[in-house]
Length: 212
Image (cartoon, rainbow, N blue to C red; front, side, top):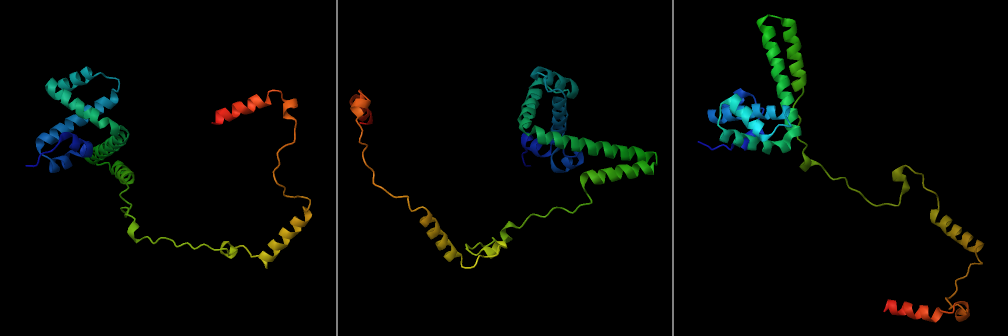
């Protein structure tokens, strides 16, 4: 018989219907998962409870030993990183449970109107009227080819006739308008630095030392 790790089972099937659990796992595993489910729900309802309080309620409600209660507590705490998702799963589970219970009660009373509403709500919530989503065949997706171009018509822009000639004409035009600009070579400033700045030589020497 295959061995089942309780924590792994709880991570996958903590809120799975009891009938399905009995089809998948031995009775001892099912019994513990159902107990941990109840303890997990109690933990969610009492987030400020101490470990001692958790153990006391587990021993009282389920008639188990303290050692087993602490073992259950370790599993519940291990499930906490999945709290947000588990909480949503729990509410979905509870909703389905309440709707099915309402349907069964209405069926006993032969209240077809309520039965119809419950069935409609169940179908809508579980989206049974929609087809299962198909996985996207990423391996069949063709990569879009791209080619560099200077042709503006690919963007829907009408090209300017003789564009290069117009560019050359504008360059000549603006060069002619700025003929006073000349490029000159760098020259050392012809200043009497010693008379303007008495400590110039000392500061220049200090600067050279810092660079070195």
